[in-house]
Image 1 (spheres, one colour):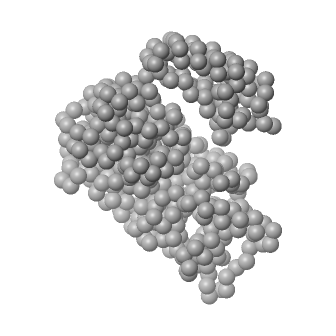
Image 2 (cartoon, helix red, strand yellow):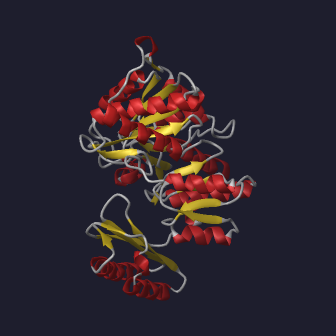
Image 3 (tube, one colour):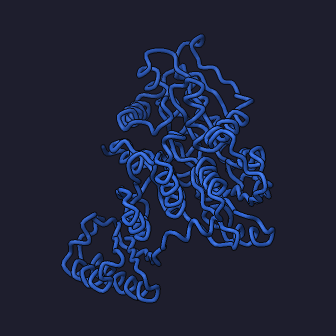
Length: 459
């Protein structure tokens, strides 16, 4: 389906520009409310949660007003991780959940994304119906229900405690983290209240970092996209492990006791191998086209099925459901454990890894070392306009790719991927030798730059 407003993960952009305005969000709330009421055949209720960026107040109020005008009741959760909104949508029996967040982006950005009543991404068909209502609203105005039918709003005061208990319940009954010292980087985002409490209540000694949001410091040189401070803090505090979330808490990366980063691919490997050893993996594992070749190689060695999806947790989820598997994720740290949560949750994923540490008696460093991580170089090649997805078939570029693959000799990969959000082509090369990979990536990027300039760019 083609969408005017919705992307692969809701509607997102710079605050005050395009669709990310109070006026548009008011109409969006109304349009979603009308569609949800009709879809559910009566009065509906919607859960709204947000991260900690300052614009969340504005968009929360706008959504609340639009939904009320459409006759939909609203339950306000306040700042909570994105997966918590998915969980609370199901728990409270709401028709949908709405998250106000731009995930790992800086505070200047924001976005709106929806969950279905099952706590999963809203089906494309409903998103398309919402877009149609938005167009109708723009042309004919926003109609209100009768005064006695207006939606009511209330705050769910115990939402934080509910999600803390839910997260704790995703580890095996009786599991404790007594004796573990954990540094937790909350990215000044949505996990700032919940994550430290979860780990503490399971017995760990917790040192919290970046847990004092002010509306402007979300993801600012911290969290999963900037884990350097966490790496230093783990070593400085003599901690066993470090955990870093992104602004809305659906991603996680970890740090071993020596301050070395453990990314989403390595987390996925640790969880898959532990589950395979226990006999409860249930099928194989889904990664993406950008997952490290070392992950695929390690799974092949262990006879674990592995599939690659398009980049984006939506596509990983689709592959998991299609194959009736439960474990998948991305190198960025967005891990899906569908037997624990309906969507990716950084806290739940970290808990699964910590449980493996406790049960195995091994360190995070030793578990991550079981997978060889291939050096990977990514270069963003700027282009004018947008590039068609078959850029790798152009003769000069195809020849260059073949030459790189010949030099890698089966010990690496080449991926060309036009960005869906910026005017660049992402050129990725990975192999066993870092200097060689760097040289090959730069050479290929040069060919791609010339090839993209010579034709096939849509203005």
